[in-house]
Length: 62
Image 1 (cartoon, rainbow, N blue to C red):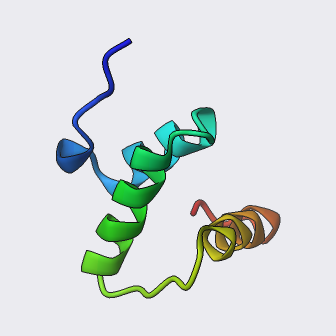
Image 2 (tube, helix red, strand yellow):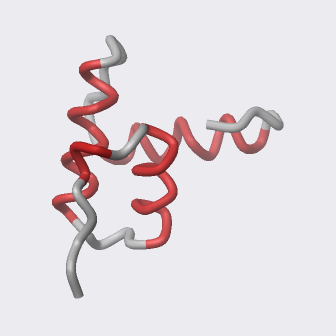
């Protein structure tokens, strides 16, 4: 299976990919890097997952 080019994906596209492929460390790293470039700071992958869950619970699309 060929992985997509993470550098060409939007945060939303990459987030969806990560949610479907939770064990893909390359994708998780790419998502963290992309979020960091957008000016947001994450301290861990767990923090990313918590942020996504919190936004979903509040009815906001992460």
